[in-house]
Image 1 (cartoon, rainbow, N blue to C red):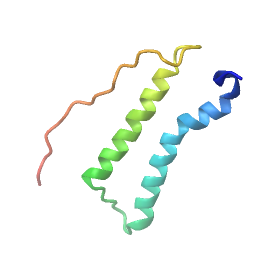
Image 2: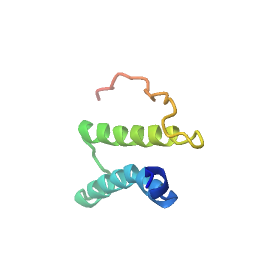
Image 3: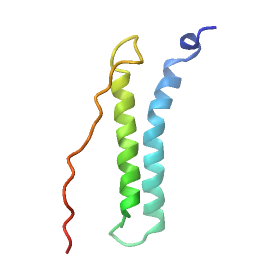
Length: 86
């Protein structure tokens, strides 16, 4: 049996959404763990959120070409901005 035939559209969609599920759970954990109207994220947590979003974007971009899952992907690199110290 060919690998492409055994994978359904629902399986592919679930796999693509897995990145967002991880992100949602991370943010939900932070909201549950912190009280008050403000939520504080560490630099490490923000990097995790960014990495998860980048993986999701790359996965979606890879699947845009019909019938080809190995389309070239343009990597998303945001511009680095210096942090402001208050």
